[in-house]
Image 1: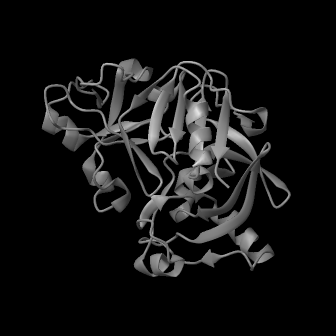
Image 2: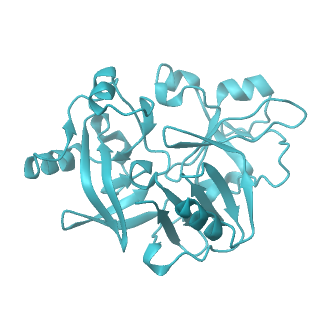
Length: 291
């Protein structure tokens, strides 16, 4: 109870708007309602992506499109819902055929990435399952503040993290997800859905960790597709914030790292017990975490 009160005091200390959202397996989905309809959109929140709308949604709602194979969100009932700012508000169209059969994309209409997040301040309360757009920076303690760096276009936040005495350049990735096999789910023995939030690591790094620390929990061939293994890192440090028991996953052919430049992608398997502020204006993140 004391922790919940601490969260509410911090989150309530700045003017903000709560946006409709749902949390499933540590993954965050924004859920605005279409104007003059009972239909709610399911938009995956991705701080390490550019956003998209699925072509099935574009066809269902007859959305306005552009010559660049992009589309605009429909009119929404939430008056305070901020529109995407980049690309004049249009989001690329994702052809359903490209993700057919991938359980990570099941049930979603699209994704909101940097064109929606940039130049704004956000708090994702993973404990209370709430999403806020803040209008000033929350007064989290300096001990919980982590400096962020961005690429030249100010799209994707990264931060310096330390694992086992080594520094890594890690993307802050709210959408990092994995689809686990039934065998892996049974081995973990938890109640989290098989499609769940994770953090990503290249295979060569995971193999090095596993060799150096055979005592760290490790599951090979853990995904519904080949090329996915898991390892549990006891401690990840970002400035003075500490995340414990962090599960990292590989991806087939390290696809999420191609052309990226990041060493790791830190996702909700690290900060899923925190209220996380991502401040694009002041280039910092705040983490208020339970123990």
